[in-house]
Length: 167
Image (cartoon, rainbow, N blue to C red; front, side, top):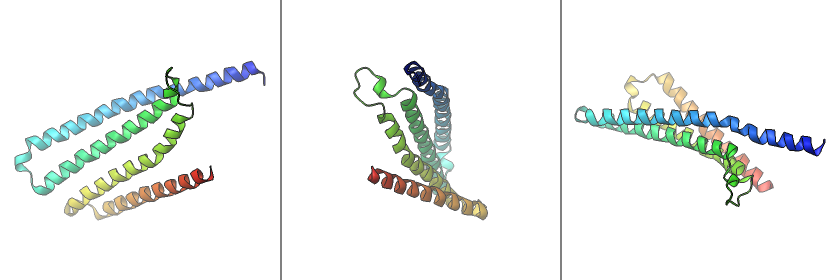
């Protein structure tokens, strides 16, 4: 292919990564929704504190932790997305290579699985605390989902380790 065509093709492909920008902005808006829900739960906990029992307090703390983990998950995805369309190597004074952002994005997968597994574990713990009012079949599904995420994360970490050792 002619060099001019190659140059244009590379430019088009690099610029197409900016299509991800609206997705990242949408996730920032979603993060604000998570924050609003966090504040709502916190205000509810503070205003209803006198009428709460020990398990109620544990449940509200678990909900707050769950929302914090969800916020962290969104932040990780947004930061990784920004690295794709606006890598730090684009900064004039930064000596990082073009591939550093991609490598960081690859390292994101285990963190995502760990966060999702933690969120699933917290949901399961909430069900356990409210076991009398919880559908036992739903608890079984929650356990299955948690085990699936943990196993998938372990397999992913194992395959990444094998791939890293080969290179």
